Image 1 (tube, rainbow, N blue to C red):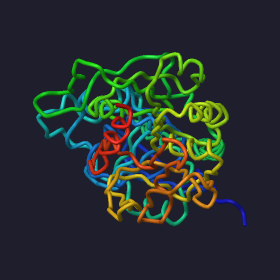
Image 2: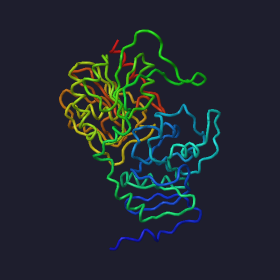
Image 3: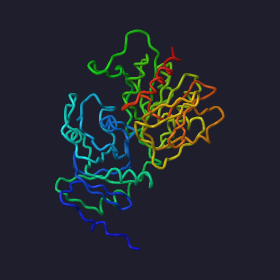
Image 4: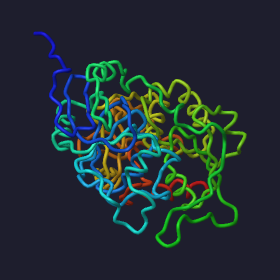
Length: 388
């Protein structure tokens, strides 16, 4: 059967935005934010709050986010609710048009914030239908485009979507990591007080490897009592050890862990051999798994939301967690010295591990909880506690 001519897809009156998937599906809507087009993996996120934190999470590099909550933008934007200096998600797809902000903390509206950061928004989409399509068919490649005049070259957008190689095999950590070594001072945010500062005095020294880290991870390490230095993703073992760390932290980040592992895994293995405590989150969890001989795999649709239940196997407690990952550690490949510690109650996938012969552990979810919940803050205290 001949492939349908996408140029003949009817365009509704007033449509200034469009989503074109690699299989030729087209969804029309109303564009906002920056003009132009962006290509990446289309995923969905179930959090009801925290769209600024989500858009600025470096783990979303290469992705276009469909928000399942319909009212995105209603609290505006401000300079405090960010997890990196700039957004890393390519764009957002929402049900309702962003309204004027209704929150005393807002400094600008979402449309202006998206324009300022060159990110494309698409409103008026049936996000429930799109989410169901992703759940049943997997996360597709696609292009989101915005043109105030409504002029779109659909065949060109389709070819752009089909030409994007996808996240599997893609190392994005080196694109989002910091370029130089630095220190982190600020603690967690409190209403009426802003971000806290580290208390004076001796504090154990954590060297964090930045594969695409969220700021709130560093804030929680400081809050737990650590002094934090941050190094780039490709920092060598010698550069890290020259900072005289008491413990090592492996951050979250985007892309395929196996690709990032080409340069990260050899360094992590050397760090494990020092016997210094090590803690990893998300991509850091996957890299720790690879470093001890396990394998990772691309998930069908991934986990992205602030409501994911995880069972802690040590005592059966259930933590409600924030998740954002499209790859997972295969538990069947864990070696004898790696014990599974947490399991996703959504699909049974691995959500944590610890080594039995060295002081190292990691979790697949985001205990820094930005946006929430805060069930897993204790992990930072556990890690920093063994450094004292």
